Image (cartoon, rainbow, N blue to C red):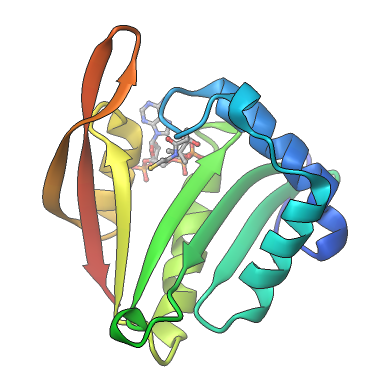
Length: 169
Ligand SMILES: CC(C)(COP(=O)(O)OP(=O)(O)OC[C@H]1O[C@@H](n2cnc3c(N)ncnc32)[C@H](O)[C@@H]1OP(=O)(O)O)[C@@H](O)C(=O)NCCC(=O)NCCS
């Protein structure tokens, strides 16, 4: 397999990042949006990448194979004083690359960055209860269950709950 690079994206990656978002949202029901609900523009993605790479409580890492983004992980902090200590983590990988260690590596790099960060003390995430692979991965990395949002998702004519998970860093 071609080499996988884990890098901080640059503003010039915005078009590729938008393409990635649309593909990964078509790959799974476990992400929040359907691909046809993604109305972001390249310029929105430029703003997002800039925000995620310049603000001290934010971090974004992408996995690239031959210049193509195949995975992405983010921690988004807050600028509100009461919440400066916490970040929300999100991770995704293109379906064709599942099971090759990319999700785990993105998570590991994000958590190690969070542990070095001076203000972050706690990382939270939301995960669909049916997303067994993700839940197992989060538990293995030390995340604990903190609660459940009932009927949070609705798809395929049914409601599905979301777990809230967290880890101290
Ligand atoms: C959850 C997700 C990010 C995992 O990424 P990934 O690159 O496939 O995961 P990895 O290859 O790093 O595997 C992580 C663990 O899951 C296990 N795993 C991966 N795919 C698996 C599969 N199909 N069946 C069983 N276990 C699997 C791996 O063996 C590994 O466990 P280990 O550490 O014990 O070996 C990926 O499946 C994904 O993007 N899903 C859709 C988006 C999503 O659900 N994001 C999370 C929203 S909260």
